[in-house]
Image (cartoon, rainbow, N blue to C red; front, side):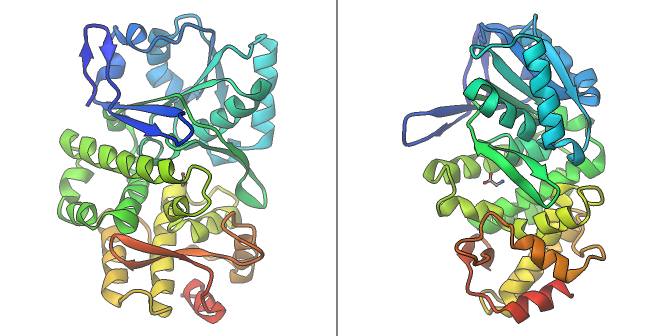
Length: 363
Ligand code: GLY
């Protein structure tokens, strides 16, 4: 865990890539409010902080401490702002501020801010330093780690983006106490995902500790955030650019991304779409005889226990299938799914029966 020992802040985890690049991940509670932070995380450069109005009003003081003379660029709050239009407006402001290549961008916010600011950092003057300060559970356990940056296109989620690692990720679980329930709960979909794809014991712990997690008990939060980050860092370190193993992080996401695009990024939050996606993709795994019905039932039960949705809103199945054809896991025209074999083990497969998929989508 993080300790401010004099002026030294020790990273909790490192995401070490084979070519020597490293992303340092700090996980703790309360340390972002510590006045010694700027000495511990020395940025020593010009800084532009990208955030939204709500988050900046709650946590802007963290950036004030890290970089007292920074510029702040605010974007709208909501998935619809993860767009090329917003990207272009942010770039205009960086140019207006005469921001140079030796500057650093701080992304202060949830997944929308982090993905968009990351894409700005990846592309502005061919790349500037990036620090992620995720303020939602979903961003802390998933989107701020691993270097996927993107904006959406009207026909598909995250269709325009780049792999670009943050040099530092600052995770403070204290910020989770200010989240509205539905925003906290949607992040739990990604936490559950890690249990299904990688760690049966973690899944069991989540089954047994629903109350402590939903009550946001500090120790439970520290544990789920840390274990999720460890799993994500291990998977990404083995396959940064998703040539094979990293695809397992997309369990539930093939259906989720299509649902989000078909509902115009308005009706469902990302974590809600992922929880529906996990239940539907488990149903498909059963129809394909890849897993037994008890496994699919456990996934549905845990989703319900954490008050996440498990049924899709009314959408046209043909349009959903069309949207899936643009999924980034499509290889040589073949749509692939990440399907559970058992809790803790998944397979990436394109060899499924189209009738089974349609039956799943029609349930
Ligand atoms: N959220 C999936 C990934 O980072 O690969």
